[in-house]
Image (cartoon, rainbow, N blue to C red; front, top):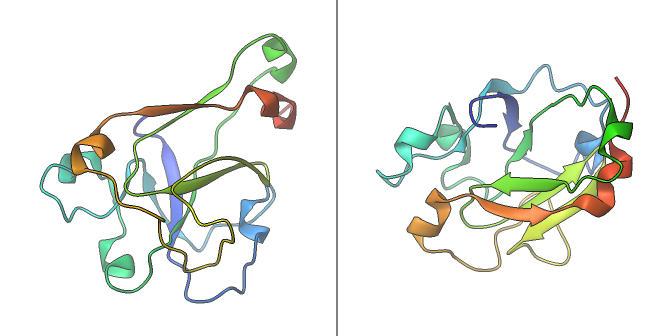
Length: 144
């Protein structure tokens, strides 16, 4: 959902590796707020941004780590369901679910802490949700 809790970090090196994608990772020192997360450089994006990371990211790094926790009361009830990731993004992303990559768009094959998107998207595309079916990863949901 839009407007849910999130944390963000613009990394300055590779010291976290992929540890930050794990469910048990402690992100208490990260910037916190609610989704949408990003930079409000385009006037049409500003109303969508609640967790503004412009000062940390602009002309510093093309990558930000963003964590959006969510709970599923009974993952077994989803056994026959379809699971979708709904994203508004510009220009690319890689998404993880409990430490496993589940979706990517416009991302380099070999990721680094300072990776950039492999191509640009038109601004209007970033204003609309895009769905990525990630049903094959339902087994990664954990009982709370």
